[in-house]
Amino acid sequence: MEGVRVLEVAQFTFVPAAGAVLADWGADVIKIEHAERGDGQRGLSRVLGVATASEGSSFFPIMEGPNRGKRSVGLALEKPSARAVFEELVRSSDVFLTNFLPGARAKLKIDVEDVREINPDIIYVRGSGFGARGPESTKGGYDSTAFWARGGSAAGLTLPEVERMPRMPAGAYGDSMGGMTIAGGIAAALYSRQVTGEPSVVDVSLLGVGAWATQYSVNQALMTGGPLPPREQPKYGSATNPLIGAYRTADGRWLEFAMLQPGRYWPEFCRLAGREDLAADPRFADVSQIMANASAAAEIVAEIIGARTFAEWTEILSHGEGQWAAVQNAWEVAQDPSLRANGLIARVVDAEGKERELVANPVQFEETAATLTRAPLFAEHTDEVLRELGLSEEELIQLKIDGAAT
Image (cartoon, rainbow, N blue to C red; front, side, top):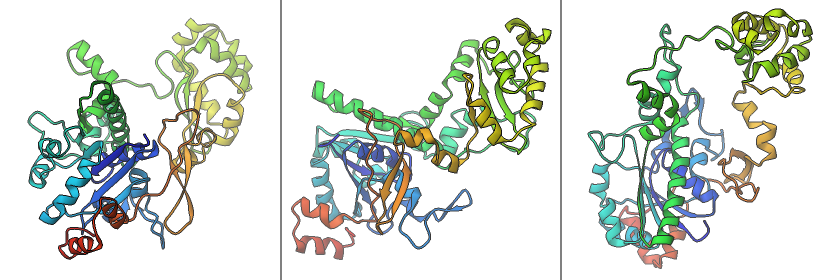
């Protein structure tokens, strides 16, 4: 996307993550942050009980992930003297990207009509909680509400008898998926403009991304005409296959099995486990018998897996063809050999010159890993970008005296 300029007026992760992906792909992404307050996410010191910043350093992963590769301009859009600068940035941009609510957009005069009056060819992109139309179009939303709760993921994980609903497994979980979705929409809009000459208005909502993530279940409910029945999950395995589902190892870790052809993989599992006798057991002699006696087989599998450690099993199972995976924590994901072999854990140098690492976006071109640069410090590029627009030193100073620029 070299040669594409994106002007971003957005906060937190959902929409800024899209800008980060576009920056990974080569776009020049200019992030407008409020001249005094900056992106609201800069003020989050702890998330999920963990400090968000690296002590004694400017490295701030909660900002680095959704903002790497951008340039930050501190601009108070509510100040009249900032308007000319904003309009010049709009004129020089291909894409305008925002997650501000309709009321704020109208107040700041950054809505579709306002921006298109300045640049009729610009692609206008809105990220929202619940969509641009309907009764909740003016309502704000986070991924925990619009994506996780309203989109069906939370209900899909919550069993009837539990007292506590499962939470999202990671910070900005739905936001990150939503940002990737927006980036894809922008790529399509840029192609459409090149072919047709017409710019698009692109809308992506967290609710829509949430429904897309749970679409299989939603589509089933639509087909049956009502809520799906509660899932009665056996303690181990599935109703017809002992080699599906999670099993706990001797040291309390988990393995996930997904061997969808029990007749094919049962003998292999028995061999790897040192229990060839089970492959000859009449209860498990062929696929129909395995399916009929899946519950008994699953109990045996649980006992076998529970007798050895996680490390032992990852070594043993690596010699088979059946599909399985280690259940990894965040640190183990960061060290995953396949992620690293594919350049999906990428190096980045922070503002102090120290080498760090971040997760790269999952899309690659020509089998080439993305090259990342750090996220900007607050308003780091204000002078640089405004000088590019042709502002003099006197004009820059006056904007700062007015409180319109940082």
